Length: 162
Picture (cartoon, rainbow, N blue to C red):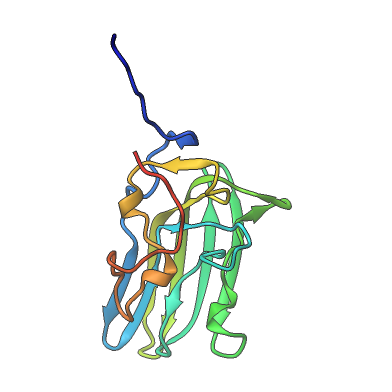
């Protein structure tokens, strides 16, 4: 008698390679900011928004999230309105978006520098329904240790990897 046991994730697999681009961090001349590569806008209070994490030497920033054909969201943060004000909630036309999106940030510093960077973010709102390939490289905002991201910190997400 042969018994065959197969184990696997019962969740849908995110086919595109989520979190293949590393999170972004910048520190120079006392200006520090970082952008995670994963967030989950599911309303659980953990990593629900996406945007830059900046120190007080950033005066303001312009931030946008795009997909292949269009801008999904644009926001700003400044010292008067709150530097964390320019964060995306994962919605476009009222619907939460799933997948990998591009971002661009333009940062204005106290040193009178203008910095422009681009990267990618993975947005999965329903972490109960999806497996994410490269789960270990999905880095969230709550894994920032002050200047850089620390993968040893628990990201607070319940994902299943493959």
